[in-house]
Length: 391
Image (cartoon, rainbow, N blue to C red):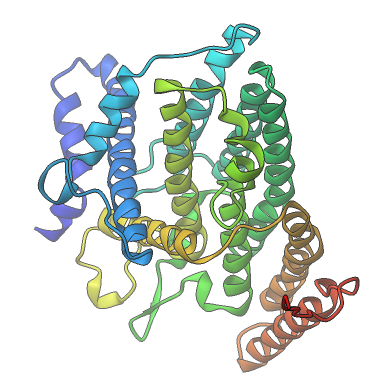
């Protein structure tokens, strides 16, 4: 029974396409999976927005959505209807074609990343030997859509916001990719399915997730920081810094076009959380061997929703960085530590089993963290803070 529950979506797809001629079944199966992805993840986006608004309300000691539906649960529906019915305004001097294409391109590119994510056992839409490379190649296209939005608006604030966003996203995309290379070095494959299979092992009932190793923990920390900056989330949400740039690269967008940017941001957060889950948290594997009877797809979605809760927690806790702090942090701390982690990963790979590699790899990473934190990010040009009071 538990095996059927684990494969229920696979069995449902096989049953649905079984009614069609054999020559149509492959294409119909792909189309059915695409429709499921397009329906499920926007639904998770709506749930996440509701949880975020309620969570931030709790953190800031104020009310969250509580008017539309019981306890405000229909608020995402009201927001969607409002976005669909609001007037679509386009600046007179804007490039109307590019202005329209930019948000559509962003949403399409973000959804394409889900094609290679293993969302459960036998639940990968496209099996590629270079799935990780495909994911990053597709993800790099989001910078283009952001620049298209800022440039086509013919608004200097939008263009400044777009340039700032592109600089940030490119800067943090390098450590994002480098932190993933460590996983490839250990697994020996770019296939996300094989990466999950390598972690789906247990010793004394405990999983072999990469996050439970020194190099894996450091890689996951760098991946999480870079992913937060890549998705423009607090404290790295400078591209849409309202106090500096009105609303960033989408200042001139309204109605459903603005909602598409909003959708792209949150679906991108779900996607990058799914990739981090796959690389470091065992993907769809269970956290304990005794829980292996729970459907694999449940663990995958539980992990990415836990990641979304962390995103919300960080937004309600951390203040926004300055642009110079953001870039210095990327190039002077995150990237060097990520490159050092590749060396540590190589040591872990070739030192063999034993407690020695745990001690050596952990010592190198801790020492590097302390040294770079105290020297590389030290503010020599600032003196001691002085407090002065008016007479």
